[in-house]
Image: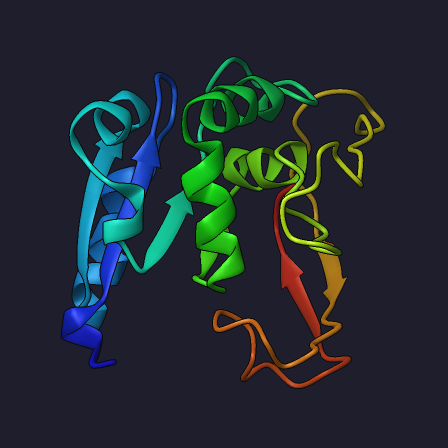
Length: 164
């Protein structure tokens, strides 16, 4: 598939942010990205018309551990069948910041069996509690199947500057 044929759905709900920046990043790659509210996807769009799904960051439903559970529940309630098919067809799904919480809470990560009925991972509270800005080291355990990380060498270490 040519990059200009790729359609990206950047999902949003109240409190999300960086959706415009996420759209811009995909647009600059040459893909066709749209920012759509969850309700808009449900009422007037078809999730399966998109090749990529992105849950951006922000503070939807608060900046708390498990805040993503509310967005995940709403998404599953309204789009479970289409989301399950999206996963079965191995279409890429990206979760950024709070969007990553959504993926875990929806049972999409750690992706052992597709869409799990229950979350198979959990988040813990930061110590000290609250937003922390510090260096976090992530070791990449690349299996080679993720289109977002497949070119990152296995066992390499990346550094990010914030932790929630």
